Length: 423
Ligand SMILES: *Cc1c(COP(=O)(O)O)cnc(C)c1O
Image (cartoon, rainbow, N blue to C red):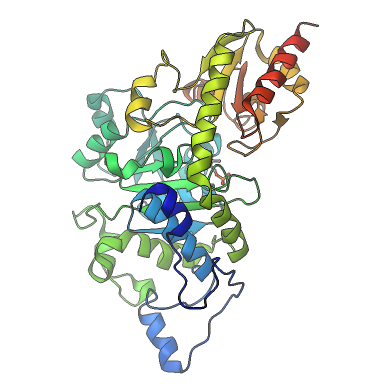
């Protein structure tokens, strides 16, 4: 099946007289014929359902759809994108370990890495996204167990060189985790370029309609957890009657361990109702992403010609620093998210944004409706000036997320707001 078809059909195939649409199984629990049946499911939780803190048929249909879209062997949904990145890392790292990340990532993720994980004794080693392979390789320590990056950075829009970072990670026998939120698997499938684990905030384009917060972790099944660096995968798990994940679950060791250990203990699993909404978004994802790219490029070109604009950052534009990488990793387009720097700095940016009528000022991005945000005073407010700079954010920077309105109306709105700052 091609991507458009997978969006509609992967994950759920109704049998004779079953519902056409994936049903909402709004139940915390499942029943068994006998005590023996309950015991069997505890022996191997992948054989049947135990409890909706970590598995539910509606959510699992969506997990299978997203795994199919990414080309992975399995997926696990989480209650937010933050939870997805947290669990993706905690499934590999423990106190005393380190991992490598570029700082060109979402502000909430920087906070998670620099503050909360640090408090848990896990060190994030930041490397410049444009560093050479030698520089990246030199950043590894004995205890470095993973590498992390964002395909299309929110909001700096750097394109992450997946192959370069995959080579460095694999040279050190550690996996590469890629947050693929902005491109979605419609525009980029990181496993095809060597990534081992993919995460998403499904709150963005995947949901698409701004109705539910969610996340997902997808496993390629390609990483060899038996290489000696990952004893938690190859030694008996005392919390699961001695299960050895790589022995019992082979290629699915990572994603089964994430569910059986971490989701069981943390319980940040989405509800069936949320997964149902996410599925509706996914059904039209392929068709929506194409239109976001078309509208995004049109608006980016308009902004480039606008005298009030100092610079436009959209990797789909020729001349953008990341255009070549964008053509390689996202040949069909770079989504509807644009960032630009307005002449006049922070105060002009605020005046301009408050003059927009169609585009709404909101702490969201990648919505079906056009929305706008000033990262320096919102999502990235907690960062220091140095961190802002490292994340590629300027005080006059505006993040503009082009929706699926007529692009003519979006441009008309921008024009009247630029006119308003001259008054
Ligand atoms: C929004 C976002 C997150 C966090 O996701 P939530 O669903 O808001 O928790 C993580 N990564 C990226 C790239 C994001 O844009």
